[in-house]
Length: 319
Image (cartoon, rainbow, N blue to C red; front, side, top):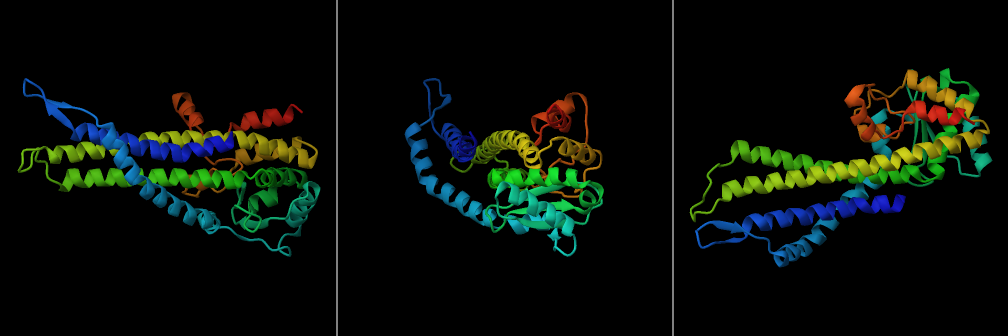
């Protein structure tokens, strides 16, 4: 299912390119009927021709962007949250907990980073054994018991074991590609509307000024649709895997209650609230988002990267 969801990202991008070419063909082709009215029509042959012509450029551009972002994600995330490496002599307690849990599940020990934040949060990141990292805040290390801290770290180690970090970083990159193109389309349309010419017809009598605006509006709509689909797909991936990581963390520790207690403490005072990048914040064990109610709460739940913390606690405590 995860592979199918990831495959949706390039399918959505290529699908929106085809829809855009279809709309441009509709605006640019047609004929005059017997009454002198211009009737638009679509040339599928022309659409498919230009789609095949643009295919290498789209795939090449997205591929290059993806490769660069994929291998630069470690430094990007560390810089976004202000993390630094944690040495064993600085906090042997955390190192011992991580080592014991790694030996329990037979996995290589990841790197450990810490963020100087007196509030509570943690997350896992990385794409391979050389970059896998567990990051915790100083508040989490200082205010949780050993059992609670083990539950949280077990949750993050499960993300690594299940390759969730690689999966989520992949989805983050695709959403970033779509959102950036969407932003550029919006800026281009704004510049043309503000600084461009509004003449409806050029010297040959054709409406190039109006057509250009219509084409950019179509591009903007296509990218907005693609962005919504990629967001929903990414959120569906992350919500499912939070439940799986909770279960894995409870299994590693042999007791689900400490993790439930830790989630309750973190939800009361979540750290890393100053992180401005929401794509990075979705990696956190609890997203530090503001509470809301009513219809706004429903909208937030639809676009939430994490399931409700109360539901996660309820599931853990029922065992």
